[in-house]
Length: 441
Image (cartoon, rainbow, N blue to C red; front, side, top):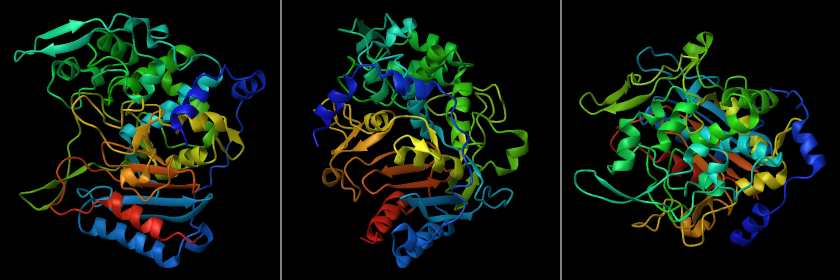
């Protein structure tokens, strides 16, 4: 498959036709929210009984070994749930058990949700991939680039040849920083000005507008604040708050009743603690909540499109099954199949891989689509998954992948940050290997 040609075909297409536009604007049907509630069993889902038993045992061992305090995991193929299990604790402090309806900080697994929201507006003809970002965010019209800096952090700034495009905003090649890492002046300024601690998206964009880009748009891949800017664009184009748009256009139609930017008072007991490994005591401990930004119990906290959502395994599984179904679930259609294929198609230029930069070739065989990574060449990526598999994860360890060739997805929900137990298992690799070895052809 020529991803470059396919992408060009999709991205140059005219605004969606009037019939599809009418469908996008029409009220969406209420979903039957029961699925996924129980397993149909390994055989009915297309796996060996021994394989799924081994998968469950491996995940339970990871919990028993204290690699994580607790986990919920789900594997589905062709809409059938092979396993949906839980093990361990919500909190080692209270000894509360992890349950099927535990709530998790999904952090960057918020990003694909934001991508779907923006693609819904694309289908309404409200933006195009080659449009400059400044067309929708005029505050970003006069960005400069940090060409170099000295040991004092003083930057030499130049004007870019052009501003970043919407396509580059979606695949993290626009040049924005993030502040999650990096000791350069750009990322340092993201931290010093508290970009991610902004009160709202308007304040966030104003702060970003005063910080230079890291490189010429399109020239590198750098994980960035771009998806928070996408949330701001959704807000501007829809005339709704970002959270309300997600609720009305995605969460309600899909029956995602546990997903929002904060934890309701009635749900606090279901909200899992984040844990890390204490090397002195050789055990897991609860990480304290951050005090430099509003609590997860604060309904007015930043509606971060890059990392703000709380969700349950059940809810996120419904979101993933919608993607597997190419935009539809239980008679609620959010996107056209064509838009889902656009999202899952690598859009980085040919010479650039996921995490590719001026000093690194990046991850071979992997690119980036609309708000998640895409496996282009499984052999180069050292993955058992099919070409076109797309995935992402969250800062507290949650992870998912969708294999569209197999009509299959996996979701693992944990809450872990910081130090891990010495010798901890690579749970993602363990799960992948067992799952692909367990398929019944």
